[in-house]
Image 1 (cartoon, helix red, strand yellow):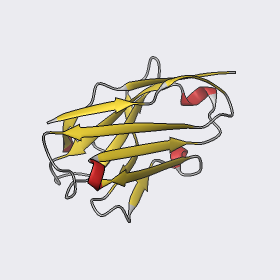
Image 2 (image 1 turned 30 degrees about the vertical axis):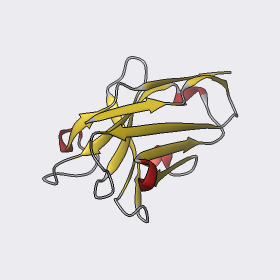
Image 3 (image 1 turned 90 degrees about the vertical axis):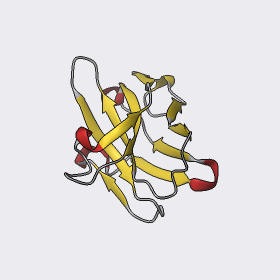
Length: 124
């Protein structure tokens, strides 16, 4: 199973961005998928996640207003839309596939498959 995140780059504050995560080697239509972010000098943290059918999402408190997660199971792809980007959104964004349900969705230990990350740098 491989996760390939893309869509990052250097953008101006106030712009919008859509990150994509293409999964190969496994159909994700039954999987909870998530995005995590790692800001410079900080640990990786949960940003958003989406349940298999796509009708229910989870967001970290900081992501509830400007972030939106979606998925297209026919394309085996998950997306993260970020609106009105701010410099504090600068981070390496990872997509992850949840494989256990022992803990909470924001716990990294729930995820066995990770992409390499796509860098988002927001300039002021």
